[in-house]
Amino acid sequence: MTDQVNPKDYPGKDVYAVIGNPIAHSKSPLIHEIFANQTNQAIHYGRIFSELNEFKKTTLEFFECGGKGLNVTIPFKLQAYELAQHKTLRAQSAKAANMLWVENGQWWCDNSDGEGLTRDLRRLLKERDASLSGISVLLLGAGGAAQGVIEPLIGAGVASISIANRTHEKAEALVQQFSELASKAKMTLKVMSLTALTDPQTHPASYDLIINATAAGLSDVSPISKDVLRAIVHPDTLAYDMVYGKETCFMQDAKALGILVVDGLGMLVEQAALAFETWRKLDLQKTPLDINGALAAVRASY
Ligand code: ATR
Image (cartoon, rainbow, N blue to C red; front, side):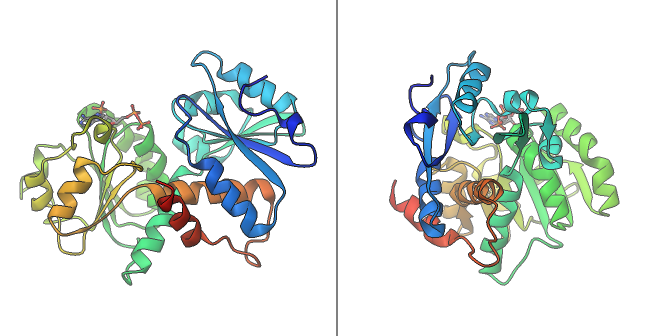
């Protein structure tokens, strides 16, 4: 059985966990504990470390011992997606899963990351009397994290998404993947080369929202220079970095330029809320989760 969570140790409680490698830093147990307290749910939520080549074995053991659901994090989101027999539409769109559970003996997966981001963005924009509808978005990065947010952003009614990535071909592949959806939604989805970003011939004067979905921050660099960033923002541009738990160079540059910049902690809380809602089958119209309260508590825990 897994080292960290054996559902048999928690009789009378539904047991959930987050699985990843590494996993010790994960705030998911804290977030789910907060939601469980807010809604009086008797659950236990723990952490599971899995060796890189033992993901399937570890998850099987968890569910065989009565585990109810797993959140999946780096580097197992693709494996979780492939393991499940049933994949929700949003998991299919992201081609990755951050939720895995068993229902009537069948494996299900879902992906709440993208919707977690759009919920967080809606909350942030509402505070400024703005919305996602009709805005121009620059998406930096074309890996798994970027892929998972394109459909939810299109669904939220943004006017345009320009994707810029170090490896140009990966941005092109993403545009191709979502081009039909974009044209149905009558919005613009295009590739932007990093060098063209500061060329007034090829880019709009500025973007309303710039999302850093690259892993660059983890190596203490920004995908774009501060000068480039300066050239493509306006005073109300929102800069969003999906990374949390540290201030990235991208965030530092945006701050220095005086624009609003936020990390991905709100997205983390929102994707957890979506998983909690799915698994606990609660009527959240009647008892909505206190997202701001959860976010404040998680921030205070750093
Ligand atoms: P994730 O699932 O977190 O998105 P990934 O699929 O490995 O991880 O993608 C990482 C993304 O960060 C990619 O867009 C990558 O650019 P490349 O496609 O060119 O590899 C981007 N990235 C990582 N390090 C970067 C850096 N130092 N500068 C710019 N982009 C970087």
